[in-house]
Amino acid sequence: MDIFLIILCVVVAILLCVINVYVMAYYSHSDDQNTCTVVFCKVVVVLTLLQCQSQQLLLLLDASNSRGSGAGFNMTLIWEIFYLAVWSNLAFLLPLAIFLYESDDEKSACERIATTICEVIITVGVVCVLTFVSWVYLQGASIPIEMISTSEIDLDTATNITSFPSVTNTTISLNIAIPYYITGLMVFFGYLVLICCGGCGLTALPLDLILQFRMRPRWRRTSEANAKKQ
Image (cartoon, rainbow, N blue to C red; front, side, top):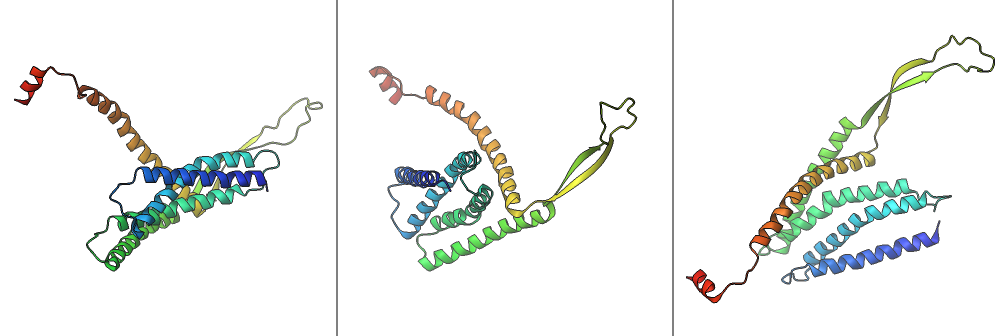
């Protein structure tokens, strides 16, 4: 194990947590009271931001681990654990935080918790059914290949080559493990969300800037301001 790399990962993780806590506190509403519900939701927000940032940093860790003799990290296992944690966050923690935060404040704590648990069970059930049922039917992958085989020929002594390579068409069948299927599923839906949100943002941002420029405050004479009021 590379001790320096381990210490660097721990320090970067602590710095990211501090930055995320500052960003979350900066954009928090002043009316939010520090109740158990609000604190739990803020912790989920910090962990979600940390996951988003760690995905890019894990690429650097993977590249550094593959150089030379390596740092001793099992990056395959780390990637599997990371994406399973992301899937668990999307399927369980984020819905739990959203349903708990949006629950009716006028109800008692037991009623709010019971309603949140029912909503989370329905959400997790739907996500698990869609994920595992689709995995059962889509876990197999068939890759068509062409195998070219020929006998060994000594070019120094050969005068007349009459043998030609034979081509055989075959298919390799692979079964995709559930961690890799979940990763591919999240990437697929993530690209769809990126295309929709990115396309809307690319068209909406210039239009908003143009409208803000047109509706900007302008200097008026006193007579013009009085006429505008009338």
